[in-house]
Length: 203
Image (cartoon, rainbow, N blue to C red):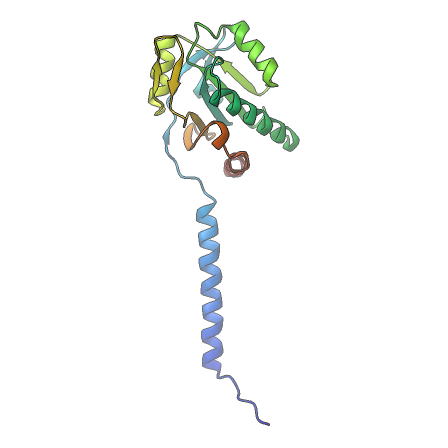
């Protein structure tokens, strides 16, 4: 029985193809893991629960997950906040919550969401204010700020609000929006956590 020898040329071609396939795989994996820049995150000045001012630019150096919401929302907002609390707990396990990652909930209904109401909401939902800002300001200013972030808000005759379901933003340490998420039941916590960790590796 005789065996045919593989020519050196064929071996070289096979090695080249394997190397090319490995390069393409690595390139695709690398490019796929980098989040695109959506746009610069508009700066804003809002008030914390103690009345002190919070400016977004003061938070540069930290990754930030920002939720635009109102506490009397019957569905999407509390579900989103609950999901964020689950993310908060995961980031605490990693040791990055508060020190490297900051959360913020911005209400566009300050007439209802007084500091006491926001404080009670935070306690009820399990929010850790060591790494989570509860922010409020003038209603018109806040709605205009949300508009700059691409969020549409409409106040109804009964005082309630309707708003864009993509009202959850991931901002990087350089104050750039890197991802916009759907809220409520459609929020994918595993994806948000993955994206946060991707941005942490960029720093």
